[in-house]
Image 1 (tube, rainbow, N blue to C red):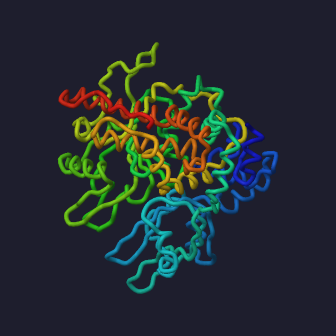
Image 2 (image 1 turned 180 degrees about the vertical axis):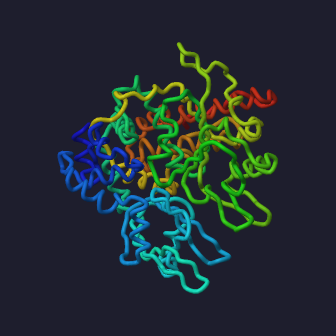
Image 3 (image 1 turned 135 degrees about the vertical axis):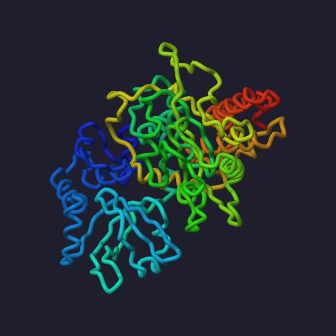
Length: 477
């Protein structure tokens, strides 16, 4: 496995261990940044040049907030740093502001209009990572002093070749590739009981690879539910605790700005039981519309996005069996989401109680793929339509329930992209290979999709017994 990963992906593999984690102690860096930096300062054997790494931190990422402000306000130098940055646009003022939360800069910082004109796609509202140069502009007349960003390079260290990735995938068998995905998520495959548990874990990646895939994951504490969205990809976002507003998620009518769902591939609402919704009636209507087809109307503005939505939360489990105490899982959701018509719009359910608590032996010690590289691959696969076409070629079902079919198709397609992305055209397969793939597809794509959708179907039936708890009969043609 170790040799296969480094040989198949020589320019995107990285050696990770508890020892390498200590190199980042005290630095609030997400995994996709840490993996890139670690690979950049490691040799082909995974040995880190600690001195070069330390110099890089001190030069590019080690500027303490107050020192950075003092250097800027002195007016004597331009300051260059690599950091997380939050952009926010004020259309009425024609200004893009930016914050550097790690340095305590949260106001009076602007992006040069020339930069916005040259590369407008770089300055979308929300959090980003990049290298930037700034200077301080002195007050002039009524104009207050402010920090001006004069250059910006977004954190895009890889130019990803999808065909290369697909060819490299062919060097692994199914079980090896499942273990590789577990490694990419930062875990030791040997610490999981069996393949079914590993599939439960990597199901957390499904919303990153399939557009508008809506998932619910409930489970006990300590299984790493929120870790993925906090660290794995710059294209995922997590909202934790508090009140959810229409302006925050969808559209702000005051400043005419779109919310978080517009700017990411997938968004998670963590600790869902503790959330409250501002104006629940309005939010439920918007949620239903968006969950159905990715569109919602706010006043006369149509909001549209391919961002998937994941709800995550804790559920009480029995200490011995680790099974939920109450089979009515929906009861831990806010009242607004306990209505069957809303719940039915979620495609699948992850049974978090099947996953072990994270311990020291669970953490990866070995070679894996750089998370930034892999998350870019998932982003490219989102828009590839041939995988959904293969579902239509392979599968027939005995029901006309549109939501069930849509959910099973999306989940199966997501598993296909994740596990067997190299299979893109069934006509390229021999008769014998096609028959083997059909059996593999059923086991690893179709059956898990039916099972995850079936849990949603059962919960909707428990809420409203007029709805059937039985899933349609999906089968290979």
